[in-house]
Length: 353
Length: 95
Length: 98
Image 1: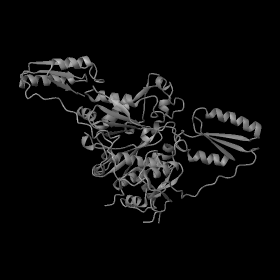
Image 2 (image 1 turned 60 degrees about the horizontal axis):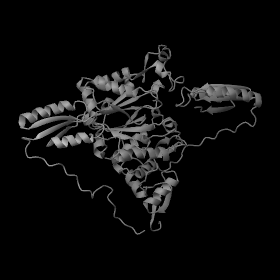
Image 3 (image 1 turned 90 degrees about the vertical axis):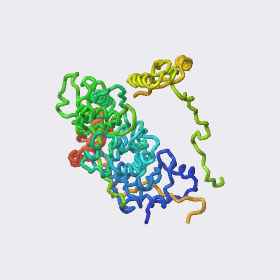
Image 4 (image 1 turned 45 degrees about the horizontal axis):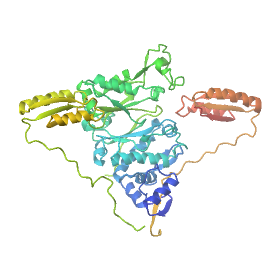
């Protein structure tokens, strides 16, 4: 295999390699696995495709996402070779124009691509879908999410304060990857809802904020839990609702909340309709700040004059994604998107049989 | 520095494991405290446990105690009280 | 071969394959020129444009100022807007107010 990347010769010690990569602004501040040619070749061997094949130019600096560069960054992140097909599918998804990666990379907003893996491959590689799935503690979640960040920094060129203009950034930018807890879900899983077969493995990327907690310890009915989730979703400071045409909400239901909701006869679509109807703020509250005056709303919303009128956070129930993940406990999470990026999914197509 | 491939365990592996309290062989004639941590519906669970204890054993007494809040450890006075008045404690962690 | 006690590692930085576009040279003088402003829609950029348009006319003899707004701050400008500015203007300033 011919590798084309520039080769560095460094003293063979973890400290020296880490130091050299930090000095060059080639890493996220955490220690790395040195990307030796042997390790990069092992990573590449796990997928179909040539090292120099590019998935496309990555913004903001439009440098090519060659399989080789994606492998170098995945090695650095600590990925096992069998994680690499997931990284590739996520990069393919992020390059879909609907994801608007340029905006995600360059904005002042603290957005990070959340990777959600569905299907049997999540179990194959040990991607955590249960207790503590947002981390820490799980190699597949931690290193796949981190590989995406290193790729966005080193291939895309999104360096904080340079081309990544995030005011604060976010802990989610280090790594943000989960699997859906399909066996604990009372409903069809996310990829089946999208039209895939249950035995297909599919990556979804969602340009979201870090999770907002939904604590409901007392509700024994669907309405109670979904009121709590809706209230968490409708906050003046989040981006959703201001650019309505691209606002999306992801509801990550803990299995106990999901079971209570389903026991009330709610389908997943019922959940979406309920949250659509209730994740609303009154016009009078929206006027207090946020992005009031520069919002992009449909005409019917701009025509509303009653300060008590409750206005939606997203354009329709279909703009609400529902997945089940996590372990025991009465918590769920709401992930508002950045409102200039839409969720995109891709099947894992590069698995080497 | 000479190459050394030995690594140190970052966990507290040398600590002596905590011992659980002595379990009495039978609950007959014992004073049992049922401690509610004050999370919702903990009382439902303890009510049922009390029923079963009365049905299946012959405790001398069953005492019900409650923490003021689940968010902090039980106050010292409550712990001392439970210690002085009971042989066995069952704590309900409802959620 | 690398010397002993050395490790060979690969650069993680991506490379550009696309042809790099070079912007045409800026006009030496703004007199009689048409200047465009691409407004990113963030608050107060319109005020900045109004102020700068006055200064450009008074001090530099600019002929006209064209002000166009993107749909919103976070998505690229529509191709029609870019085509219009390219046709009408000698120079375009992309504004990023906040």
